Image (cartoon, rainbow, N blue to C red; front, side, top):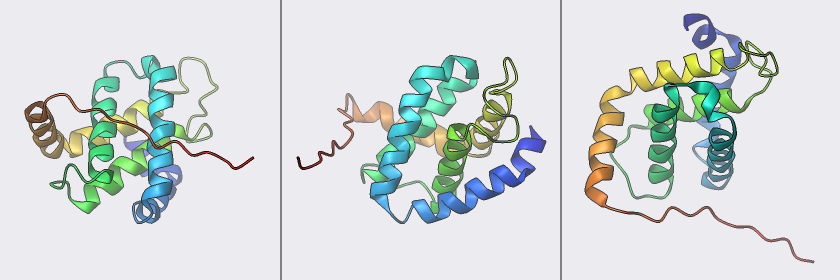
Length: 143
């Protein structure tokens, strides 16, 4: 797990994440892509999938302005982990059978463990919110 987190790939993801959180539109697109990827290949993450989905929901709630208790540095870490997850050519390329998602799972697990208090607080907050309709913005192109 430490190799992936210490890799240049994850450092680059952290830098991109710091830039992304200032532009909610681009961040919204990234969160949408991460949601789609988790639905499609989340099974390869095993038990980490539940935490990854919770991290994604927390980031979406922050971006939507519904959840304000998350420190900026925590949002950067979540976004960096999602960038790393989406990058098919990270430390262990995703196309390698059996091993391709091991580093992705390790990074997501590491971030979830580092943000466990934030994540647990969010999950308690989320339960108290009741059902929420979470929609992604739809962009149309003029024809």
